[in-house]
Amino acid sequence: MTFDHDLDAIGLLCPLPVLKARKRLSALASGQVLRLQADDPAAVVDVPHFCSEAGHQLIHVEMLNGQRHYYIRKK
Image (cartoon, rainbow, N blue to C red; front, side, top):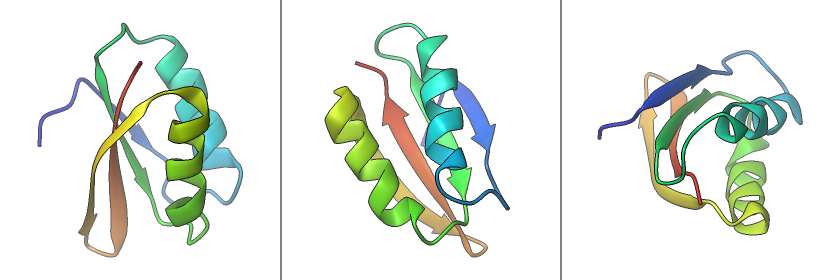
């Protein structure tokens, strides 16, 4: 999966992965894709909810080496 920007939130707990994703997405152009790497168990719920509320599109989630990678397209 291709992406424009990468955000490593490994080791960060709720709500930090989503807060950092929000900040990073604010700097991106509409349509660009952010890959968020997170291992916080709460991110499974928090990231999709954040995308839904903010209007971004969660286009893919994959598990690699015990970490989830969320691919978020900016609205």
